[in-house]
Image (cartoon, rainbow, N blue to C red; front, top):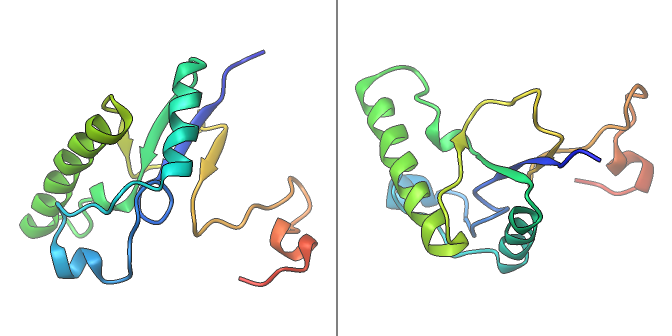
Length: 127
């Protein structure tokens, strides 16, 4: 059985985040840990599974100097946050990879393969 490769979103999934925090506090401010997700990440790592931090924060955006600097500052802050809360630095990316077997994200709406039907729809829930 092959091991999972997890992509875990940072803001609102792994770390607490309120809309506007990035604008208010800057790219180096990362919220407190979401303990339930931290436990899961540590368990996956203990089982030998790969975990990537998946966040738009490290996307240089419009390629301006400011956006490039913000992405770099975010990358460094996320690495330090990982070390402090997870005990290790994990790979950090803003790009989806074909290697990811599962993506954990507060904004995603999972679609049942080959159906076009979302899990949210199937459950009758609303977003």
